[in-house]
Length: 359
Image 1 (cartoon, helix red, strand yellow):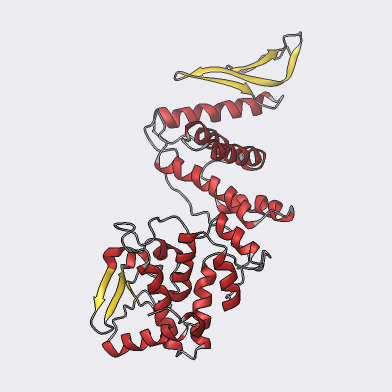
Image 2: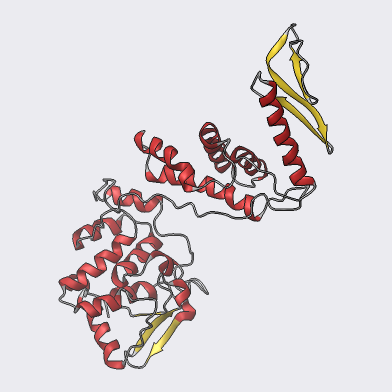
């Protein structure tokens, strides 16, 4: 340990006596104190590492080049600054702990290729696609904040200059489960009041969850052709971005009329998703399929609507129109005969047993 080392390198003494085996850094450069172990006993290699650290400081102070930041630094900063529920913060901490030994030392940004071995490890251990995507979303969050929110104090530059797309994993698509009329009766009877009405409108119109819960009275428009009102839903609320003319059969209209006057804006009074714990509990209690391969959410009502139209011998073009399946480049405008035909189609799926007491 008596060998003389270049300036900035030292043999560090142990508190108990003797020296640590590796050469350590001990140098001040442009106001930055360089410290730590070189993890080597070779003075030439230690000097090379020290020169690299000095050049990195020069790049920041002289040329304004971004310092490299590790994923671990980003994850810790995200957790420190997060204003979220305690349960969400706990989830962040678990993700950071899991990823630290795997990609913690990787420089930001983290790319999808950097996660390949992590994803394989999770899949091998039996993790669900949802669990894997929670991990990926945590990485994406760190990348986004490093690029758009966090600024280096010395250079005034963002931590990174670009944010790569880190795509989520796609699991096996769940199979839809169209309901029979008997299954529908049992299932709907188990739903809470307002949710039962939403389900009845959904199964008789094929509306997706988002436009269904956002249905507004201001969209209701008289139709001279049909002699009743329709709902003109703006494209912003539709998946394909195209406005939709919603035609109601007698069952859907009965439910909507029963809600008139309850809320000044929203037909159902709330924009909370239809599918929630109460929905899944009713689905289970109704004896409907529970396997992971089956869909259990509100989208099944859309499949039920489509199946019943086809079972009623509705022309495929009309089925597509009623399901609002159309390219983004196409906007449909219905003539009076077309509107009357679509109205006749949605009335075909009303069971005879439901006609009693329905105008």
